[in-house]
Length: 307
Image (cartoon, rainbow, N blue to C red):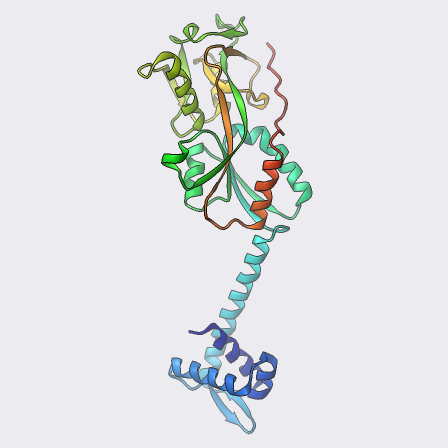
């Protein structure tokens, strides 16, 4: 059914005069009359009756008019809502981030962005790297902030831009035999028990690749727990449940751990901003993407926890 014909029908019903309705619609009376005739033919029902020089809705036309008003009002409201949502000044943005970025870089970035775009609403969630990539692929997110992933093979439809890289350290609990040192080599810790990241996190891949280079593909850390966020890992390390690899991020730590450099691993945790390729990005989401690219160095300075 032709949307324009419904608009014409609504206007004629309200004006009760074909010529007057055509003037308000900026079309000829003949074109308007033909549009109404086509609508009646499609419905199989006559909608108007002549009343002198005017025309009025008949019984069926009045019933149909009520539905047309509801439908056109809903669609017009939807059009206005979408236009507001997509507007760079008042739009909505769906963003998801891994835990470490959500406690360090992102709060400062969003604080500055909000001052420049106070009317933009951002829906923020914290997920693992794989969850973020999955939701991007399903068009459930506009932007994501995640760590390493297999870009070319597993996620070719995802675009990414490197924002920064965090050095990875070894976390040991207070009182551990290694806690009085500032650095170790891998042989010092290869037989230790670890609290590791699960496969849904990007940092797990980074750590495993670094260890594989020095210990070989058949080596596996002895692992007591698999966790998906560094905050839980550091607190479990503090309780003496194992050692863990973590990034430099003061907001994650408890006082009862110490960070050591692993000299022969010397590995880094890359942080990417990601979005789906060949999908429309609203002006608001694009504004945040461009803003993040221009403000890559907003992380809070790292302060090592003291014993």
